[in-house]
Every structure is written in C-alpha cells, then in structure tokens.
Image (cartoon, helix red, strand yellow):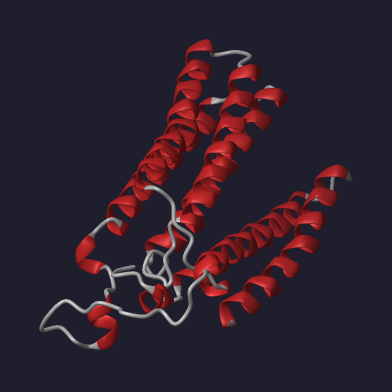
Length: 236
C-alpha cells in the first residue's frame, strides 16, 4: 500500500513538471529553465517507474514478483522503449543519430540481459514455495485431501491463473524477438544508412512497444500467489 501511494504521488507530481518542460521548449524559455524542469521531470519519472515496480516487488506472497529484478526490469524496459521513441524523434528531426543509436543499443542490451536473468530465476524449482513449506511439515510429501470447494473461486481465478508451459515459452520468444531482436536489427539498419531511416526507427519503436506489452501480460500470467497451496496446488 505504501509503494502504491508513493507511486500515485510521484505520478501526479510528474505531470505538471513534464508539461512545464514542454511549455519551456514550445515558448523558447531560457535554457536554465528548460534544463531545470527537464531534470526534475526525469527524476520524478524514474522514481515513479521504480515505485510501480516495487508495488509488485515487495509482495512476499508472490514469489515471481518478490525480487529486486522486478523494479530493475521495470526501469530497464522503460528506458528501452523510451530510447527507441527518442531515436524515432531524432530521426524525424534530422539530428545526429550516432549518440541515440549507441544509447538505444546499450539500454536494449541491458534490458534483454535482465529479462533473461529474471526468466531463468523464476524457473528455479528450489525457490518455489510448496505445500510442505506452507504447512511446516517437511518430513514427507504433504497432499491436500479436500480443497473445501468443488468449483473455482475468486481466489483460484484471480490468483491462480494457469498458463501452459509451452505457451509461456513461445511468448518469451516473442518478447525477445519483438522487444529486443527486431529493434536491434533496426538500429543496425539505421546505422548503416547514415541518413533517413524513418521507417526503420518507426518499426523499432513499434516493435519494442509490442514486445513490452507481451512481456507485461506474461509478467502477470506467470505470477502464482501462495494461496494456491491451500486450493490444491503442490507448489507455487
């Protein structure tokens, strides 16, 4: 709850500063005012994204979320999509592209590595809560004889969503292809072109956004609340 309230406060504070920064550019305000407003908006944006990640990262009841990798991935993916959108803006504005290409390539590489580490981490069976650890009975395998209900409940539907391993594996490939590989190839294309590259920059930005959208859905679909242990699941 504390992280949720913080995220709301920072998000509300960010909007007027972002609007002030845009207004300072639009009306050609002094450079110091633009820099000051832009710096504060960037800091608040960073804190807002971090707080959003911590809303999930602090939940001990969901192992797949209770890790520092969650806010780290939030920040990395936010920077990755933002760098691609910034590159598209630089291309359309006719700016020098090399700094933007280098920045995007670096951030996308970091985001891809962090995402791979996260996917590897959540698959580790040794870290998974089980019915034995939930009950404290560790001498032999515990089996639930009666779940207390004969049909799905709100808890089993809201916190026990199941996704097939094959489907999850396919979607992870989609995440890496659309979120990282395609934008990376487009960056190479823009670098080799040395001019123009509007279409490649647009494809990179759109592909990155779609890849992150798939990643967000999978992030929630793979989450397993420990309440499932009391509704028939052997492990979460």
